[in-house]
Length: 467
Image (cartoon, rainbow, N blue to C red):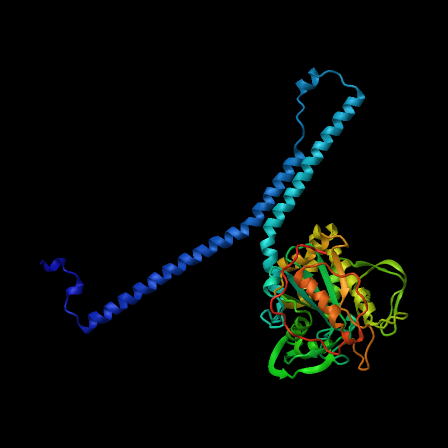
C-alpha cells in the first residue's frame, strides 16, 4: 500500500504522538461539548424571546380589536342615502337605536376579548410570580395514621387556616404589640375550610383557641426563622389548642387537627397579624354588619356604631382580634363569629368586579397576601379553588360552624369537646353526607377532657348528597 495514502494511525507510536493524540481528542470533546451548550443556550434564548413577546402580541391584538370596533361604523354611501325613501321621525329614531345597540354589542364583545387576551397573556407570569413570593413552610402530614378513610377523601380540598399573633417584625404603629411584650407565637385563629370533591358546598369549621386537647410530641418551632429544630417537645395530655402552634408550629397544629377530625389536611395557610392590615387595605376595606357597637376592654372602642360599616387598617385588625367585648359573655365564641363573618366578607370583596377588574387592587392584594402568609401546598390555583367555591354558592351552600363544645370553660379554663357531636360532624364532612342542623342534648358521659385520636379503618362511601 502506498505510504502516502496511509493515515497517521499506522505510524509508529511514540510518546510525542500519544501526547499529541490525547490533546487532539481532548480538544475534540471540548468542541463537541461547546457545540451542545451553544445549541441548548440558543433554544433557551428562543424560548425566552417567545415568552417575552407573547404578552406584547396579545396586547397588540387586543388594541387592534378595540380600535377596529371603535372606529368601525355602518357604511352609509351617499348614493344609498340619496336613493332611500323619506323616513318618519319614529323610523329614524328606531334605526338610530338599532345602530347604537349593534355598536355597543361589538364594543362589549371586544372588551370581553381583551380580558381573555390579558388573562391568557399574564396568567403564567402571575402564577409564577405569586408562587415565588409565597413562603413555603413544611406543615402537612398527609400519611398520618389519624386520617380516616383516606381513599374516600380523594378529591376533597381541606384548608387548615391558622391566624398567628407572632409579633416578629411588627412596629409600634402596626398596633399588634411587639416581641418584648408578647414573645413567641400563638394561634389566635384555627379554622378548617372543607371543599368536597363534588364542589357542591363549602363548610368552614372554627376551633376555640382554648379547646382542651391532648398534644402529641412535636419538633420545636422557631417563628422568627419559620423553621424547626431537632429538639422535640414531649407530648402533653391536657393543654390548650393554641399551645400546639406555640410549641411545634404548623406541623404540630396539623397533627392535632387531624387527630380531632380524622380529615386529611392537604393545604396549610398561616396568616400573621403583622401583615394582615395590608391585605385589607389593598382592597380598600371590607364591609361588616354589627348588631351593636364593639367596645373591647383591652383594645378599646373598635366600632362605635351599629349596622353596616366599612373597616380597614387597625380597625379591621382589632375587629378580628377583639376577645373581651363588653356585653359578650361568650368571649372566644363571639370572636369566632366575627372572624367567620369577616373572612366571608373579605373573600366576597376580593372576588367582586371592583377588585378582579382593577389590576392595582388585585395585584396589591396578591402581593400583601404573599407577604403575610406562609404554609404548604398553597398557590394561586389552590386559593382560587377556595375563593371561587365560596363566591359561586348561596348562603345555604356555605356553612360557618364551630366545633361542638360544652361552651362553658372547665375548672382549668379550657373549652371541652363534645365527642359524639364532633364525630358526627366530621364523619358527615368525610363522607359528604348532609349536616345535622339540630341534635338532641348529649348525655353527661358524652363530654370528655381530651379528644381521642383513633383512626377509622375504611369508612362509608361518599354520598352524592351535598346537604
